[in-house]
Image (cartoon, rainbow, N blue to C red; front, side, top):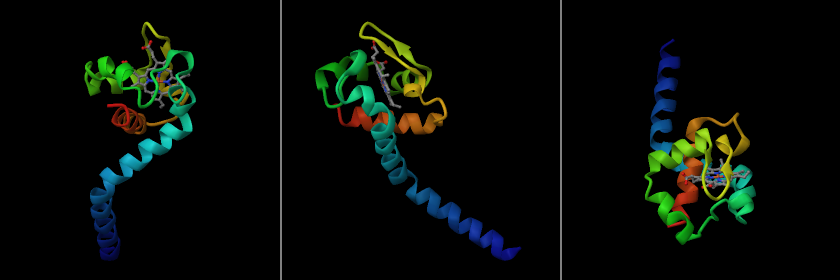
Length: 107
Ligand code: HEC
């Protein structure tokens, strides 16, 4: 029993320290699996990754709004962003880290 508790504490501590780096890596992975399909080339009106002019007014809406729009979907003047990029099996956290990656590369 004691052993289990110690092992759990170890995992919890490691998880805590590694959380941020893991999130960033995950965001890139998800972007490359899902979001790139539209956001790399600007398919269907999607703002391209790295296109600062396209992202500036979106970033101005605030990260909370961008996270929400990526999770719930968003139809704007340019086209329609499907909820979670069509991958509704992804967790909200996974989608948020992909948004952070995409936006981070676009400002
Ligand atoms: C099927 C194509 C498609 C896929 C896949 C896709 N997007 Fe989009 N996305 C769009 C389009 C189109 C828009 C622009 C909508 C508009 O403003 O009219 C958009 C807009 C956005 C925005 C800006 C929303 C806003 O409020 O301005 C974010 C953030 C975003 N996408 C994140 C993501 C993430 C993260 C993924 C992967 C999980 C993803 N997208 C996958 C098509 C896609």
